[in-house]
Image (cartoon, rainbow, N blue to C red):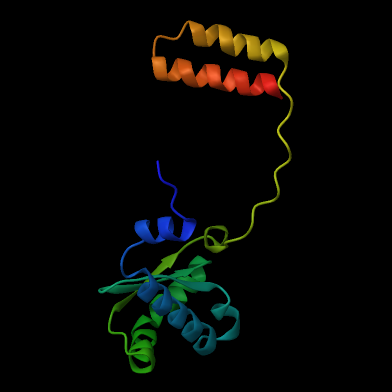
Length: 146
């Protein structure tokens, strides 16, 4: 099996228009930050843009309803400012979904007792599925080394 560098692997699975969509969503996000009133502009995110629609997510249902009330005006301003003619779709999504953050560092895994390793080995030997058996024995040997 050949190993591709990570950037080649990512490029191979991303859609062809990924950079275009990324650029457009960033432009829409900047537009929203600059043109919406202060408390609202911090609670909205441009999450997708395709040929038919621009999807804006609001962290709060009240903000989503406010945007839905003025969707025609916002859509018109996006068209005039950015030249995008897609229709605007507003969705309410919890802020936790919209926040991309780093995960807390994980602690090192705990030690596995010798009894557990022996139980895995014993149970692996009674498994009929050869692939599963091989993987269980591999796990047991790996745990034995620690």
